[in-house]
Image (cartoon, rainbow, N blue to C red):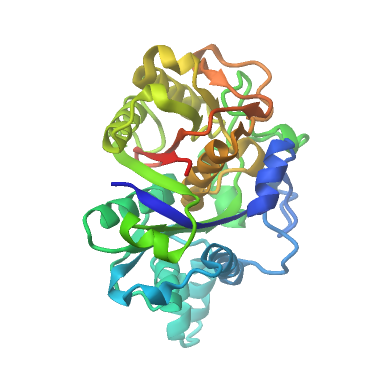
Length: 392
């Protein structure tokens, strides 16, 4: 059984839902010099930040969450479903960078407020959404690095299938353009250091890629079982399959043969009852790191065989950065939008394809079939997740 998409929303460095989609198709970038703090002495001085709202820290985090919920929920009447039949599934970072400031204040014996603890807790977003809806079904937080919100979407699908809920809200939110994150990922050697040309820094699958770009983002999808979807709203598409795997390799590296990607893709297609021949598009994880891109491409070739050079693939991170705990849901929604509208967004800055990354890469907006798409996610610790989406 599939889950029906009744509501969707995202906010990235490219803007809100429609602005993000429009600017992706125009190859406009949201990557620029950091303005939120003085990064002039940092190893990396650029990112894909959501600006112009005058907020940072937890205030920005929850502002983005509220905004995407406002848009995704729209006029949906959640009151038409018993509260016990509504679940919430959210991807979240286990360690928030603003916890340091909170700890410093507590060390000075300033008493913590319960509200602060809740907003800094990994479960904060899921709890906030549940309170807003009065949802009394399962409330689940997943913190598996960059696959967090993809797994949230998948677990929401499976909860609907198991009959545990009739409606599930799934999503993720992350604010990565933060001094601690920039320094931390720089120390790992994971970030691009193209400080002189930030708009060309994220270049997934390109021979000269040198790392990813941190970004801010939030995304939410409202799913419903087929038996209640018709009473609540118009179908925007379907989530039909989900699978996860683990590389059991190294915490920050991926195996060269892409075995984890292959397993996630094959099992997700099996879960959806979908033949690879039906695929019209794949939104790749495509971070722009040497190891991830080569490994993911190898996994896709292994999973798809001869079809790997026929199914269009792109990485939207090239224009909106890597939003970590939020990227899975955002990119699943972009994959759905692609097969709903029949046009695929490009991978920017892909000038010379690395031979190890050979696939059917989309470098200019491309007309595709309206049908079925995949969205891949991969994360530190070796997690891999694939979501299968289908146009209405």
